[in-house]
Image (cartoon, rainbow, N blue to C red; front, side, top):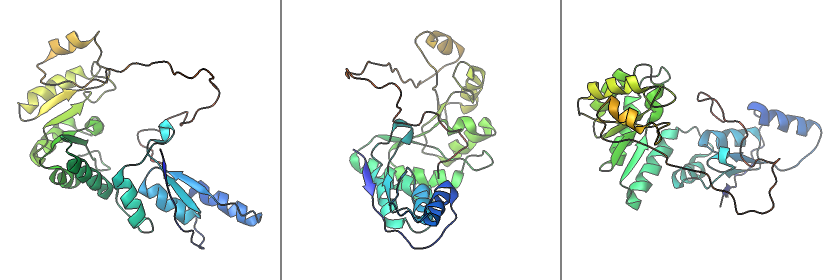
Length: 248
């Protein structure tokens, strides 16, 4: 189930994106409906409040139609909705909660705007995660130099593996880079290929280099048990944003 975070409305005027524009037009037309804004980040919640929202519905995975947000996200929105906040604090809370639950490991990764690994913030997350295992996720594939990124991640320490598609869309397309990464790693860290791996291409991937681990979804689709189906309505977002766009 989704949870709604109800926040008081401030009687101040802000110019914050399309939502604020809607509110201005409503005020001009003397319409006074209460607006509940669906948000999926601390930044979105702050902007909704500044734009004049009556309350916010805090969700996760809006592309999937909206799911229950993490405990870290809920806590941070409740405590710090009205002041600027960095998402790193939400991540730290989530990692700590996972550790308290007895999770064996976490997957994380942060980059600087220039495409380098954010060593300072990743180090902070790794320290919070200890002694759990840590995997640096496919943010690695977005770095400006995968071999420098590899060295930076190794220097941070306490990160056991890197999940990568070889800086390409799929492992097969990035296989040459993966081979070089394995050589460069020299057993200092596990290079774990992931992205588009299927039973039909496994042998080709294994033949290219020595791999200690691989990452697969091994998923399939099953038919819904619903008899009545409405095909022209989508509960999630019909189109996904670019990797370089953030909902706010």
